[in-house]
Image (cartoon, rainbow, N blue to C red; front, side, top):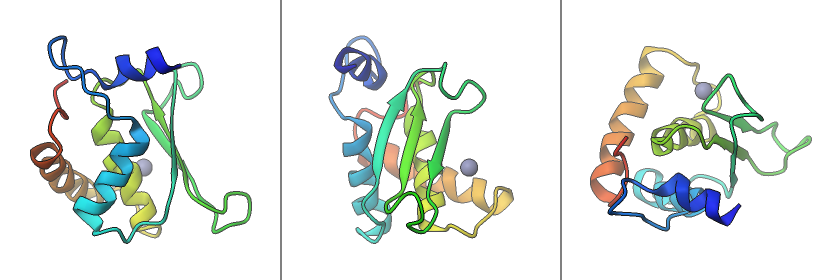
Length: 122
Ligand SMILES: [Zn+2]
């Protein structure tokens, strides 16, 4: 799995960064939300687990999941954008997919790429 993780965070062949999705979530939380997001568990899975989507957030106000669990599909090289999308679900649980949601993801992703070196090359 460690090997898989490293493959997943390689921005390109020359620049292979060692940022796990967990670290990326924590950094996003600080950068975009100033640490206001709750602690979350972020994991990579291969495409066989969620073949029809890039990522999913499991969060039910503590019923089954006391903390949000974010699952990222490793197949997507540009997984950082998926993580921003899922983190926005954590930040704004009632905000539905749509124009506003997508606009926020785009703004936050642009910001994250700028400040978190090594992201966003797909
Ligand atoms: Zn979503």
